[in-house]
Image (cartoon, rainbow, N blue to C red):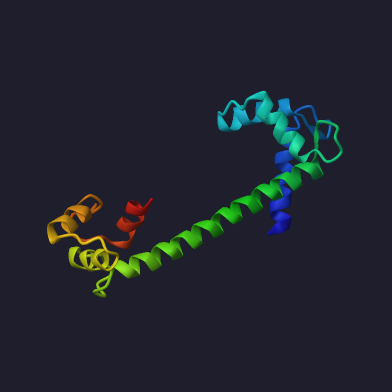
Length: 152
């Protein structure tokens, strides 16, 4: 899998290296991003990206520098996935605190009980209104997915 990914990145590097000099300039990077992504990256951003990975200080990315940059980007993406998983786990724990009736949803009654425990007493009508704002399927209760939307 790693060799396959490395091969794909080498192919990408070759396509970015439009003048085939074995190095990618900020200009080549900008042109490729415009052509492939339709995104016009400012020259300063492209230069900063190249500079961030330019180990030998020549103002260009060699293939090894490009592969290192791609690997760092992949690690950053993995870290983002770990953060998302932690967030989901925290939301599940919070959902469980409100979902006291074992039904897999937050009802107006369970919301009222939890708010009372937190010192924020609310009547049944207020709890129904709070749920109604995020009750996307209109069933009068909050599912975990609706709770996630409410918490975002």
